[in-house]
Image (cartoon, rainbow, N blue to C red; front, side, top):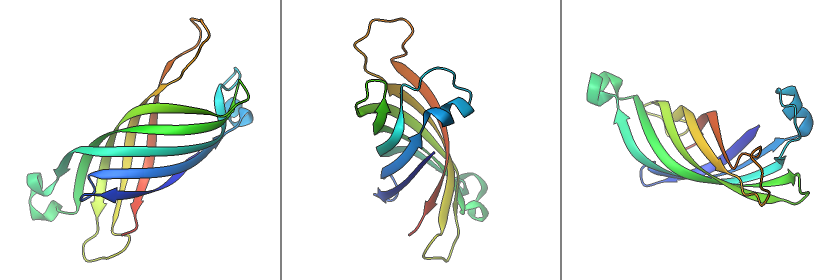
Length: 151
């Protein structure tokens, strides 16, 4: 599980998010994992996103579609994992690409007027000093999420 809060700047083109999540060995095994969890425990994260493209649907369908849009962003994620196989907390980083769709805007409201769903592809970089063909040093992940804009 992972939950976060963030701020957006420059007309929602730059986002910075702080998050908290957790993964225990028991949860990992319940999700189908059979080996020892390499990274888990409490996870504190910081994510930076830069929007590279926005598609307002009024460009395609006219003013009746001004409430709907989509955007694509690139970014980075830095997370501190409290439980590792070494027994020490470890920072890991990832690059990511995010598709935010549908991005809905409710007109004539000041608060809670925007919400969206997003799909995010991540490539996690895992440092290791052990020579082994079994250890993955780049781990791909897909994340699905919801975003609610307060203001």
